Amino acid sequence: MTSPILQVALDILDLSRAYAIADETIAGGADWIEIGTPLIKSEGMSAVREIRKYHPDTTIVADMKISDTGALEVEMAAKAGAGIVCILAESDNSVIREAVKAADLYGVQLMGDMMNVKDPLTRARELEEMGVHIINAHVGIDQQMIGKDSLDLLEQLTGAVSIPIAAAGGLNAARAAQAVAHGAAIVIIGGSIIRSADVTESTREIRSAIDTPVKASFRKIDKNEEIRKMLTLVSSSNVSDAMHRKGAMSGLTRYAGEGKMIGQAVTVQTFAGDWAKPVEAIDHAHPGNVIVINNSRDRTIAPWGELATLSCQNKGVAGVIIDGAVRDLDDILEMTIPLYATAAVPNAGEPKGFGEINPEIRCCGQGVRPGDWIIGDASGVVVIPKEHAYEISRRAVEVFKTEERLREEIRRGSTLSIVMDLLRWEKK
Image (tube, rainbow, N blue to C red; front, side, top):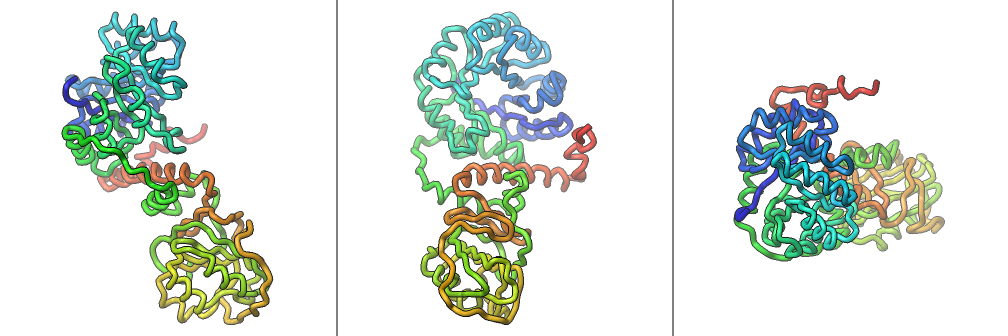
């Protein structure tokens, strides 16, 4: 394998959708088509047979993730038309050996998936010795969500074995090129291609990147910078989906500002419209923070108004949320800073100094701590716990990418119920 192989993973549930995606990836330069584990679990060996029938000259990879009955499952995949079958590297040696025997018997190759292997270097050498044909430096999607990197695993394995090494897990065009430059003979791409609105163009972009790779180290960016970058891409609805419909504030109206509000929380507890602590919080906030105020559900006296909003806008505060009232809306409506509140009244409180800056508070039905991430847009506001912000942001991006492809299929004339195959997947 002197030139890099581009393997595209059809990690979807429905064979009816797989046909078009497979066609488009091949048009864009894909070499191998992988029938992903979700598709195999959903459609069985029919998915392998059907894609094989429509693309007889393309290598088909069956991602069986074999962990037992190695010979039987390799035989199933081989007879269905797969040229390469995937087995979990952490499977017992007896399973590996039986799978290798079956692969040799039926003339297919065995790819060892290194996902979750505790000692990848030692295990890769053992797999090679047992007769496995390809090692897959794979970091699974749930591991990617918490920051594990397939390129780190690839670097551990490069040069350790003489058989080809594949790289898989969270790769885009730039990272795929890095994988090739660091020794990957096969690059496996899933979401970056199959969830794209233009699958063919996305495949071409990755094909071009891996054909002319440039070896360079990725700049390790600050985790908070990465979280903000990901949240800029997605919507509050995407985040809500990623959090399984948790974290959304209730009862808010967006009174000012357009676009998206993203930032870490500076929290304020105040009472009965006392505006001292809310205003003092502006001096504690950094550019890009969101000030979140609990006024104990008092909607008759406003702890916030135009002058405080102007101060925030000048300082670069990303937005303001008030569980309570705001006033001076005629002036605030002229500003660009996003401002959410549960009411608007003309009454102002007094600056008595009660309350606290940066305590843990309740705001519009959600607990908020200083440093928690806030995303707000026209749909509403969602609170993201700071310790899970990276994972939730990554998952929200996956939701966003999935919707991109669904949106494109609907534009082509389908409907949401047909694309999602709702009748098939309704709970029985």
